[in-house]
Amino acid sequence: MTITPFRGDSPPPRRPVPRLSVVIPCHNEAAVVATTHRRLVAVLEGAGLEFEVVYVDDGSRDETLECLERIAAADPRARVIELSRNFGQQAAMSAGLAETTGDAVVLIDADLQDPPEVIPEMVAMWRDGADVAYGRRRSRDGETRFKLLTAALFHRLLSRAVPHPIPVDTGDFKLLDRAVVDTIVALPERRRYLRTMVAWTGFRHEAVWYDRHARAAGTTNYSPLKLARLAGDALVLSSDLPMRMTWVLVGGLVTVATVAAVTAATAPPGPPGVAALLAVAAGVAAAPTAAVALVGEYVVRTYREAQHRPAWIVRRRIGLGLGAARGGPPRSAAA
Image 1 (cartoon, helix red, strand yellow):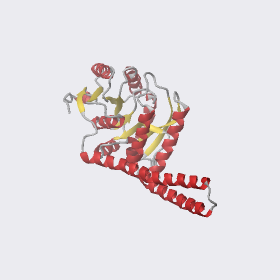
Image 2 (cartoon, rainbow, N blue to C red):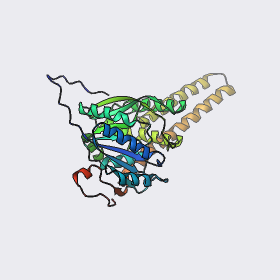
Image 3 (cartoon, one colour):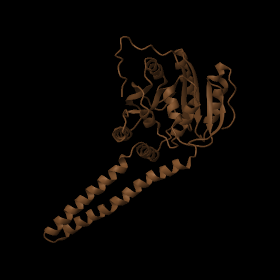
Image 4 (cartoon, rainbow, N blue to C red):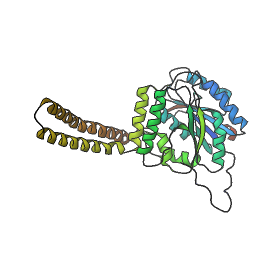
């Protein structure tokens, strides 16, 4: 996914230096969030950017919210969006996007695995015409071989399953133009997976290659089970390929069963043939069950969308962010 080169007589004018919003979802990040803010501010100030930092506390159970309150009290460019409970990272990022006011918005995690020093390069690409400047990982420090392998396989499976281009070896670290942000915020889905939603919007994308670091402090909030659930959500929410593949599986097993039955009928009688036939029959019986279960996953998600419950609930807002420079009113009322 790359930007189409300009073929006119002269290159398009560069965009002006943006008013930048940075969205950081936080869940139990008390050990690192103060360091994250200092490092992020140093990078953005060094780049000469006007900015706000929108922290979204996603139902943290440690001292994260207290740390964020101190940050907002000391830095008027910081804002805190406190959610009423833990809604998950995808909802927290979406809540942050809905609160931003900048010309461009950066999504970045709080753990400093994605280095803030890459943001000025993203801004430069945005100024040159990219609507989405996404981080693409050259390397990933501090992760096991199993995690690296499964992540690589999942990214490639997702890119083939989704009907629009999805870049591989990427995460949620990216810069979005205001038009992209407004489009995503306006989408009606309650269950969200932003990587595929951003790609679905189209616009012009450009990759920024970088080396991903180990966590600066703390531990990951994603267990293998949570990662598996996230992967399942990504596939079911973004593609109908899993449902279509069930019928391929059922048809293939029925064909194998037919061949095995004919072979068993024409072969000399004996236990080996009967055992093979029973094994195939068991597989054929299991396939429709698996197909019904997968269809049920789509039905459950359809039901949840039909309920029209909000994807997140804001308990309160703290700070002004870019509104401080405009003299805007404080945003402290609960949603």
